[in-house]
Length: 128
Image (tube, rainbow, N blue to C red):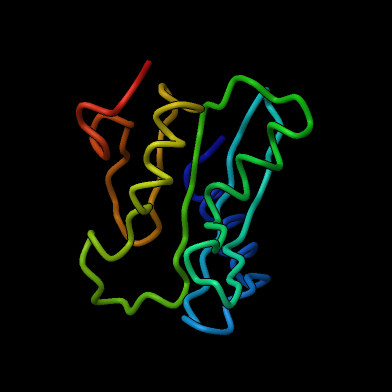
């Protein structure tokens, strides 16, 4: 799938994020088995139990039986235009999910022009 198309889906999904505490809306879109799945961040009062957009999208895909995840796009629509690359990247937990569930996927980050792969985001990822 085309980079900008997938990032656009992630930005659109982010509009539906539930983030009453951080007010930081994030959307993710992934392609698995030729189908597209989206997810949003969902915050709750016990902040550590918040569900990130990336993991939400993975759960949507895997719940339907998807296996071959080829592309992942992440959009933090409330990040300022001047946000540094580190302020746009997936958290550590989501990076591990990427390593386990989409080890060969192309990863697009909204606001960053280059494409990434898991080793770029999580070198020496934990694996069994």
